[in-house]
Length: 215
Image (cartoon, rainbow, N blue to C red):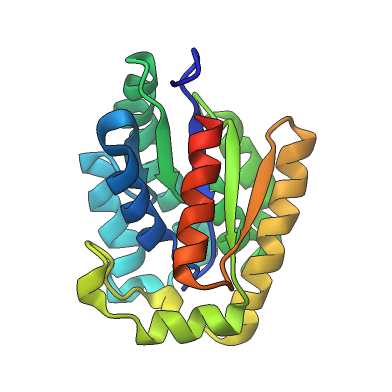
């Protein structure tokens, strides 16, 4: 049985952590019991912004300010047009990435000068996650998986420019997630960690069990 208040849960993780695969498994396990979304994207307009932010070849050389603002533009639209309406209907929402990714990728790993901008934009969001779930994988293993994954197995998971960054970038991303979670916890939002270095079937069972327990 679902809790009385529908929860908003954000799933975070670096490249090759298996988030997309886990989200597919969760959808198969829970069906229409939850609303599944992703970032950037989710709502129709946010999906258009997604293409500009991470799929367009020009995105790789865009300054961190541009990427950060595009991510938040998509996020505001996703929150207003998909996440909040679903929660108002009593349907829990699980998102593949949310603001933790913006902090890890654009702030901690690219430009710490934008930290004030990040937190100011975050304050403008109409709603924040009730819980973060971090899918933690060693960056080297994650990149190995990202480079070798079979694209046909992951619906709508095309290659993006983050896959092509150096290992030091991805190591910083992982550190950035933990820095963000510590700050978010101070502001009242808890997080849990799932070890994704284990076999996929084990991770799937753990992940689905954790989400079911929360819901």
